[in-house]
Image (cartoon, rainbow, N blue to C red; front, side):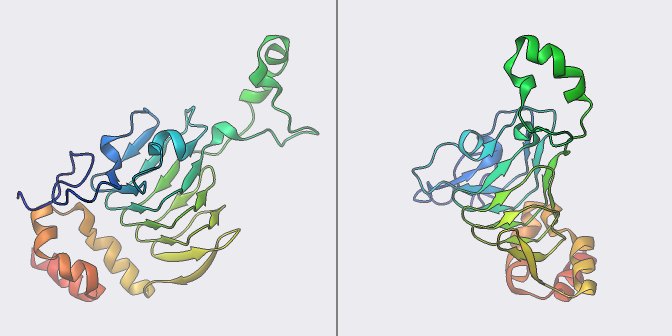
Length: 216
């Protein structure tokens, strides 16, 4: 389908003027970063590459995993556990990072400190401008993160959160409809089927989308 954006290109193949939108899968290089098809970052045409400017302390082994069809606004940032300081004892000073005798004296202790796990962002998530996602957070499918929000804990599917620290404003749909959408998983459909039913995906009801899914 030549009229559908090519997920293998850095910028959408169907809009030559849409150069501020970057399909991240084709830009990131770190083995600790995984991004699904059609997930994009709006760099406004002037910002540095996402991996360098928006993902901090990506040293591993924890990963940042982002699903399909997720939209990330300008300046949104992800803080990875590599930037955390120890908080289990009297001091938060990172002695281990300096090498030499300090590393020798603290490495075993540092490695024994529990750290946050992977940071995971689901499918069809909208992350607003300049939002900050803290280490180890999971953001569910269909969630919306408000501009400038600071997300310190997990966000459920189809929740809208905002503020610092981010708090739930509301859930986009009823529990039954959220369950329908999580079962349908339209983002996993073949792109031809997504294209055929794009209007329903965008503006239909969860029940209507469920009927499309059940129709095969």
